[in-house]
Length: 493
Image 1 (cartoon, rainbow, N blue to C red):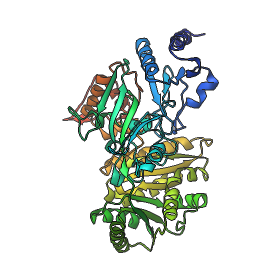
Image 2: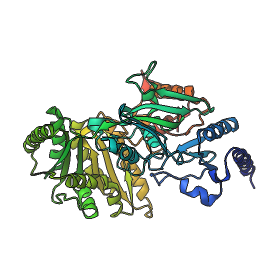
Image 3: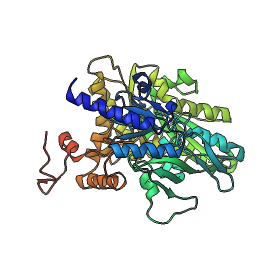
Image 4: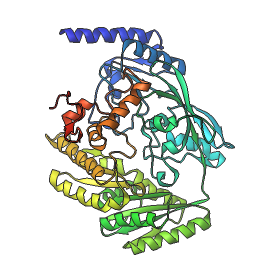
């Protein structure tokens, strides 16, 4: 056995013994067959086996695990349901996965204050189900809401089809209770409309598990609208559909949801869900209005006018709650539906200004020819959040590399068009190179300083989200100022 292998096994054995002393037997996994289900999240192309998986049942055990790992210098990756799509929950080979799956209790629903206090392992949809008897619900609704957890939503700042009107996770969370890597407990935010001091809540939400481990989340609940209806519009040209999105917002209309799917996406979805989509259309838009019956009627009339002027060839309005849910079921089932028609697919996540949607779609069509791969497009069109689904076959040599390059080109074009490399899936390991494109060296250095303020030894989810300056140098994206390269001492590859 090589010396480095001996060192690894010694460190692993020491870690396991320490963890066995603080966790019940059923809360610690360390055999290969038990670790295998945790080797990746929803981005299955990237896998790694951890040294151990901890499944604590109370906050005291979380504190003990974090303190132990801090003392031993062992990396910790917090994990929820594993539905993330950027590799943010991929384990560290010399680290521990800290699963919050057993933190699945709804601690309090307060219909008067319109809030709910939940543990991080509670499913997104379960919050709305618990609030339903009070005529309330939790607004953020990612497509994976039936399975994804509030802790994961906080880590990734998740959105959903209704985020245009009701906001992302950051707009709907009031307070989080957090454990630091040293095992210290602190709270950010509060149940009131504002909290004293710096807005650390906005900093923490979307930090991808790099700053602390959440053990409680307090969220806002909103009243269920009296009525909701969906307008479904068909277009014979993708560019027209993209322009229609910009026209709706330009008209001063903020729909509850505004989604777009191109022809390949609807062709995949319709046999799967039977939502009633127009399969001859090059693109369809789903535009939802909610509120009082009078408000809905007025807004839908305005939306119809805008869509007709934008060149819609057919317009339908849902006539029942069942039909409205069926229209949305198709959009929310786009990812699994595409999975039925291709061996593998790569789901991207970038954001661009709404007015550039048509330009981006045309560019993606050219990229399909360039890389020889198909792509189905679904968008949170209202806020310019793209979800291209690049279809490939992992068993074909070179196919994954082409898909990865295809995705990287989409992300870098998003930045060039004035957008961002992510809207809701996070950076994780998937987009870490593109962070070198999006941000200049001083900005990346500031991110590292924030990380160090919470986790100075870099043990929480290391190697994710924020690239090292060495990595950016290797990627060839170090920024040059006044003809001089920053940090000239860094080796270039």
